[in-house]
Amino acid sequence: MRVLVSCANGSGTSLMLLQTATKALTALGYKVTASNHTSIAEGKSTAKSYDVVFTPLNFVNMFDDAAKQGVTVIGVRNVMSVPECKQRIEESDLKSKNL
Image (cartoon, rainbow, N blue to C red; front, side, top):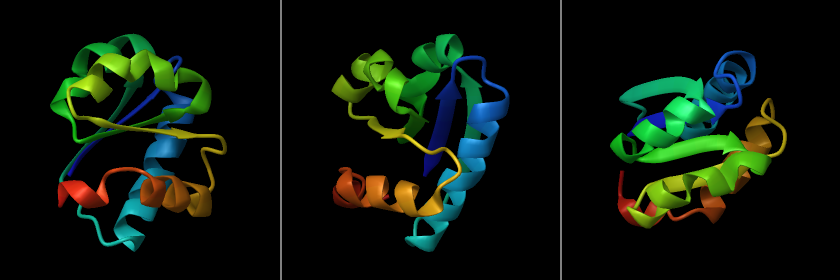
């Protein structure tokens, strides 16, 4: 599974969320084959190349185009919470994609 994590500047928050999301995905049995963290500006233009995008809740709507093309977009309130990430993953359509 190819994972993109995007935040405002693409440095601190996205790096923390990438680590959290990777732990959550792995715990749920998904295999992360590629991952990247970026700013929103870069993420919007590259999101279509990924299977799933994680981003803080206030940025979810910025990935509407990617979602329309089949990319799963997951918003997270607490970027350091593995339990929240697990819950958001389980509520998403990832399971139906057989990744």
